[in-house]
Image (tube, rainbow, N blue to C red; front, side, top):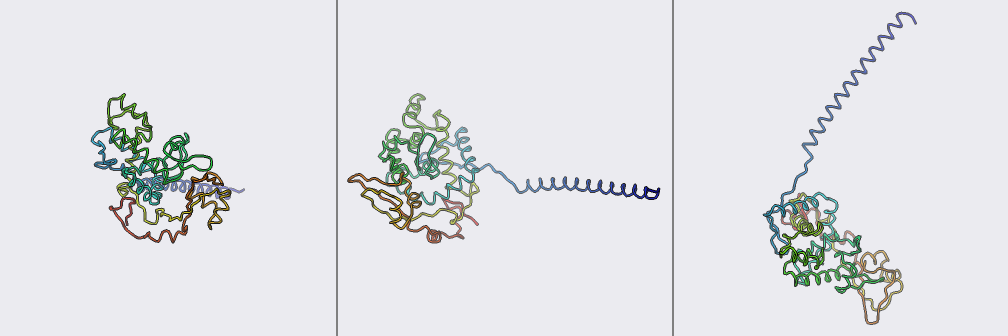
Length: 334
């Protein structure tokens, strides 16, 4: 390579090096600018707010002492958890539309305050849940307790999963507890801990007030979980929750079929009713086997949906309706 070629090659290498350095400096500056811009936009557009606590709140007509700092902080904890546990809270709203009407009616007929519907909601989120200890259904009855309050529980039938019957059984428990305590907050606490534990705590600690009791963590939080869900469901806009009518799960009208003799094959029985086994089990989760023995003189009522067509079931829902702050179930707004 002659001298001229070497000089030319050396010059090209210098030019290339300077060009690469400039590119590196440019992208380094761009990255810094991009990061700074991103942080600025993020700060301007992302917000996490601490919800404002209600000025006052009651449970079953009993005033909660929110003027006490430890009571306020317990409620604050549960409101924070449920406000920002988005998927679970939204699902509770959606299911409430379907199940509250039935549960409210039974509570009213049984003389139990309406606020206890929120107790059922926090117990199971209105699913047929089974706890690690074996409690089951909307109202989370243990098998022994369920039988004590009149529910049939065996390998073929488990009425803990029967929404109406288990709600009546829960009302029987709540009424019995109220006869003992004459205080609905203590009644609700006893639903979680049992009457014996609550009675022992009241006697040992020389108080008659739930809010003055030192209890285990779960029972100590229990009423506040109920209160938090009540506050959010009744004032959803205050907690940033917006749902259209069409987002909610509609009630499903059912037809009832009486059964007074043993059904050997529930698959065939469902087909005879113009349905299928999946629908039969979905609408009658209390049926725990593929057959239904019926004792002499006994009978059951099996339910089938009148329709599962969304357009039919949602005809009463208006997607564009605006309900605003007057809504007690959903925070619908434009």
